[in-house]
Length: 198
Image (cartoon, rainbow, N blue to C red; front, side, top):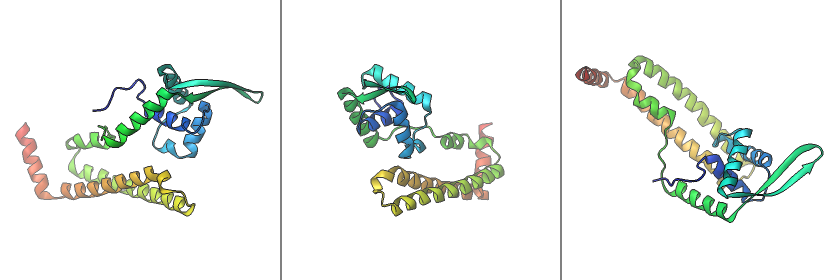
């Protein structure tokens, strides 16, 4: 079971991880997250980043280290990870790596309600999903190929490997579901079951 955390936004985890490298201001954190491609896995915008940094500060996980004044830019506060923040980062990472978390992906929600869509339309929509999955699989393979060509260590693109595995599994599942929905016997038993609920 997931622990209750003072700050539970995944962006907070990413901020603390970035601060293990060195103290920095939120603008720099955002730049590095984008530069390292972490923005593909963690949704955020500038205001949410500043909000999370403030939540981490209030929780005692980061602390203001200094304020940098530059005539070209507005004043910027540099934050450092506290020992409490490092302990929280380590504990949170260990939990998320070792323990599967309950997640609520949109496709899972759509699948649990799929019976409200006419079968022929569901097959058509799932076919469109297959095409979209193929495009994402190709894009992810391309990113991995590019990283390999640049001699990027696999550990720095591990999330892309994970995404590719999930996309392939979802593609296989979707293809099988389309075949099931196209099976007349499956549809007959589904219709019989639906009538029994009336």
